[in-house]
Length: 349
Image (cartoon, rainbow, N blue to C red; front, side, top):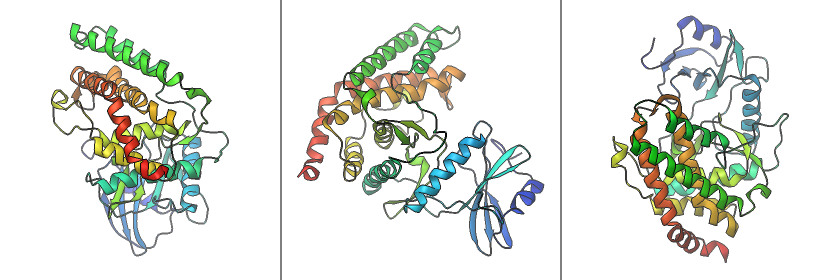
């Protein structure tokens, strides 16, 4: 088996590829990227270059895949940047169900990973706004799961679980961290609800808008890669998560060494890119720090509640770092609001 996760057998590859009309296969190479439980192969043929993916267990529900493909096709029809799905031979179906697995074949997108360039940050905001605009009135029956990280019982339950389990994570310092995170999460939920969040329209959102799910070229997004987290929620939740993902400062091996602050320039440029397409209301801008606090906490507690770790990082150290970043957001909300307002002055004229 390939190191670190699932793999294709040679017999499986031959059988799957026989269902596609992509010419004579010249070369096949494994691609180690993304979910290690969803193996990928780069296929070179005389008609082009393709990416074959077997969906991971838990991500292979027939309805969810069909819905995601319908959304991708709708986006592609509107010239949204994504990789084209290749249909099965002699059909219009764009995914293959075989031996209790689901397979997808994409036209390969040549691009580079996010390098921190400000032009790329602006475009990430702009493309997210396009995503929301294109799907604002899109419907599918039945619609995807409704919900978000906002005011979530599941998030609170995970926090309680981490604080109550009798294991290495239950020292006094961590219990205090959990208490503070719960307080900040509750306060942010209250602040957001007071601005009539529940009255804002729901629509299909991406659910996982971060740099790792995109390929870039010349400072622009050439392909959005991952549509596994689609759901229905107010678009502002997608924006808050995206703004956080493109401005968070990390990169050091130990979370204890990560700084509290976010990259304010990237934060502002991401929002400016978004507002060039979809201008936000005063209340939407006002609640962004609270939504970012909520998503910071929500994204961290699920894996830590399940395993005690965030990826390969200590759950204790990671949650302490999250607490520091949430505090920074809370204390600097006025500074961020002023920076946003200054950035958007040219768009408001």
